[in-house]
Amino acid sequence: MVFSGQYPPATVATSLTVATEIDTLALAALAGDPGWRRPVLVDRDLLVLATGGHGDIELDFESLPCRPGTLLRVRAGQVLRCPCPQLDATVVRWDANALRGLDVDPDAVPTWWQLAGEDEDAVISEVSQLAVDAVRHRTIPAARGLLRHQLAVLLLRLTLAGVTGSTSRPEEDTFRRLCREVERGYRHTRRVEDYAARLGCSVRTLTRACLAVTGRSAKQVIDERVALQASRLLAATDEPIARIGRGLGFTEPTNFGRFFTRETGQSPGAFRAARDQPLPDGAARPRTVVEPRRIHPQPSGPPR
Image (cartoon, rainbow, N blue to C red; front, side, top):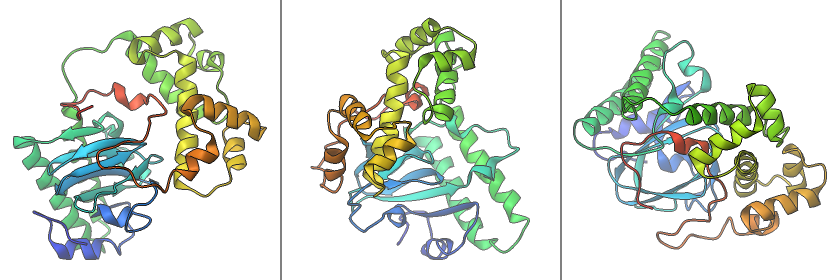
């Protein structure tokens, strides 16, 4: 694997052999197979910076256009696929505890951003330096603090891109709170009443907030999150369908099948069977959910 542009090849080859809480690697190293026949279930947080070529990266079944300077924020638990051999990208990867104690919110980083100008120069410089230091100081205990702060600076720079100076609407704050609770509890309950009780508000308040932000009801938002998780596991793992359903709170496989078909338009078996099929150029798989991450402001959005 070779980084293009600013990234020295020696850095890449060495960093892949080092098990650290923060490291860098080439995008191709994440693939389950050279052709990315199926999505990969990401187990650590990532930043993906495109450095060469053009193509689409499929994130949670949505194709995002990438070219040099495109940056993606990928969260642990999402599924990622890049069936474009002509696209090169650098990945910054970190464990959940790498930012503990630091005043930075990685979830505030835009999901997609086409860097340009001074922003692009600064991000490329910081990613390059982090990649070098992750290898150069890998045996020095004090380097852990250096890498943690370098990552924090990089994420803070990207977070500031989404700061507009305007205050968010009350509905957006309520929606964010709901999304956090759904992340904690979607495997156990899909009842809006349960989430309203946890948040100390009414079902009507949650529904109004979801409608204002996404155009969908609170019940739809919760069900879509469950369907997304089912889609991720069906596409990226070989876990039995019945076990996936049980893990998401469905005691009967038939109930899970009906739920998934209603949400996605495909049965679990049909969805899984299609996972190894190559995507036509420029095509995306059907979206199954409206994701909470869309409420984060973006400096610019990918073409739809």
